[in-house]
Length: 272
Image 1 (tube, rainbow, N blue to C red):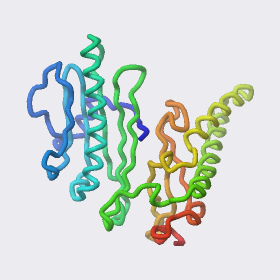
Image 2 (image 1 turned 90 degrees about the horizontal axis):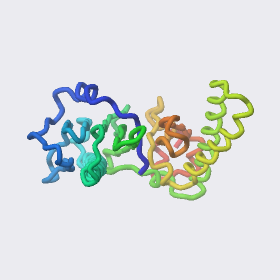
Image 3 (image 1 turned 180 degrees about the vertical axis):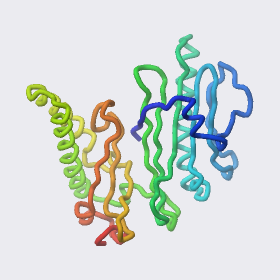
């Protein structure tokens, strides 16, 4: 899974977590690495996390809705645990090498962006800083169907290679157009555009190869008729552009999707 977003300052994160945040249960020594805050009995509710030591900072927030859906809660827990494991490994590595630096930082916010009750969409946005110029982006989307009690995958919606080829072609065109517009808006000299467009095109082609794995992060786009107008695909930094471009999205309408949708899901889309 590809990852994203710039770190928020700890002070801002603590204010954002407010009183709902889970405080550290005890003072943590400078040599203690962060451990995964799992649900030991499989039933413990997800709780916000704030941890602060001389070696690292952790801030994680969870949406209340997740605790009503065990499958969704487990997916969010697994994602956050994986990020915490990466942080722990980095902290232990720094201790072993005797490195001294600014504290490492894990900032992760899970937000409910669902507009309706038929689907729950959780956006994971954050970053993991373990040194260097900037943090590692942590970006993910979790689309949960309450009626089926399961997470919806992009491969469930579009099962064929032909379908992903059509989606890939459409997304590539939209991303390439966006690059061209940015260069014009930024008044980039014509002589410099050719090389920049060539480099951008290479990243776009690699990051949007016609495979469901490259389109794993998505959000259904709600329409006025109560169905889905299309799918919004989310691309973290480095997948289809440099870090400076940030997270990019492309909305793919039903007109492109419909011929390739799994029949069982067509009724969820406009015109299906």
